[in-house]
Structure formats: C-alpha cells, structure tokens
Image (tube, rainbow, N blue to C red; front, side, top):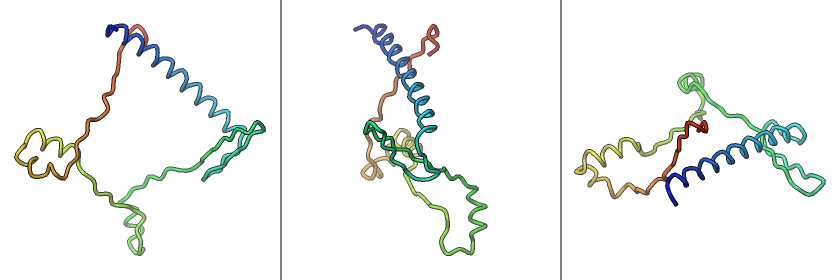
Length: 127
C-alpha cells in the first residue's frame, strides 16, 4: 500500500478516535451526574442491568516545597519525598558525545528502543 493511502487511512482513524474520545468524555460527564461519586475514594455503582460503574474521586497535591519544608522544620517526619533517578538527557549526551565515558557506565544503563510516534499533518483536514 502506498504511503499516501496509509496516511489517508491514518487520518480517518485519527478522526474516528478523536470523535470516540469526545463522545466517551461526554458520557462520563453525564454518568458523574447520575451515579454516586465520593469526594475521595472509589465507589462501585451496580446498575439495574448488572453493569458496574466504578467512580474514583480524589485530589492532586502540589506544594511550594521550600515553604512546606520551612513550615514543617520541627516535624519528625517530612511531607516530601526525594526521588533519585537517572538523568536521561545527561546519559544521552554522554552516549553520543563521550564514548570513552559511556564505556565506563554502559553496564549500569539499559537501553531499549522507544515507541515510534507518528504525526501526520493534513492542512485540508485540520490535523
């Protein structure tokens, strides 16, 4: 199949996907109005036809970490986490720019191919 035909099929599928997502989100908005939703936590709503609709309410927490640490300085436990993780941008730079250093650390790093993402732009279709 030609790239043009595949691109046309991709555009049609992407449009259908977007329409389906919009429809699903609208149905979810309507369901929230007619089933039980807890402020925090899960609720299983069993409908008359046996279908179960599970809702989960909650909050996201964002904080001024420095202020939070200052306000809780006397607390024995702190309301913050420290996460140590690999710096992917740094590792990528070392791998490409400094093969001598990469050779030293390569055994501690696992590389696997990332998913290839495709974007198709069609000015006649608004994509």
